[in-house]
Image 1 (cartoon, rainbow, N blue to C red):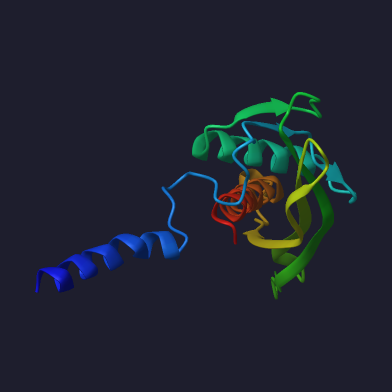
Image 2: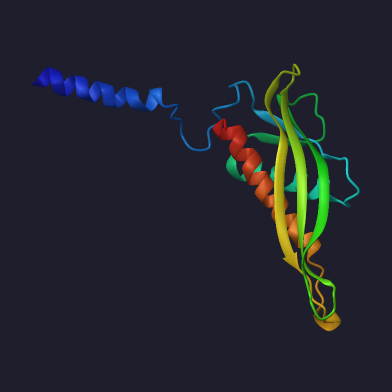
Length: 173
C-alpha cells in the first residue's frame, strides 16, 4: 500500500510538468535571455489618423502591467527583443440607419494588424500577421449633445488588441 501511495504522489507531482504549467505572468514563449523589450511606434499602412499611436501605447501599458520586462521606446540596439507592429487595415462601415433621416446611426470599425517579436539576432520569437478586431459605436443626431465616438472606439479596440497580443506572447497561444 505505501508503494501505491508513493507512486500516486509521484504521478501527481509530474502532472504540472507534463501539461506545460508555469507561474502566471511568466513568459513561456520567450527565451530566458529576454529581459529588455523595445517597442517602437507601430507602422500604419492605412489612412487612419494616430491609430498606430493608440495601439502602441496600449501594448506598452499592457506589457508594463503584466510583465517585469524593461521596456524601451523605439528601436534600441541594447534591447534583447523588439516588438514590431503594423496597422494593416482600417474600415468604418455603417451598421444601422435612422429610417426618418436616412442617416447612419451606428457604425462598425474594423482594424487589422500584424505583430512580430524578434530577438537581437533577428530570430522571430512570435508572429501573428492576422489580428482582427471590431468595435461598434453609435452616433447622435442631436448636435447639442453630439459626442465624437470613433476615437473612443479605436481606444477600446487598442486595449483589446493589447490584451490579446500580450496574452499570446506570454502564454504561447
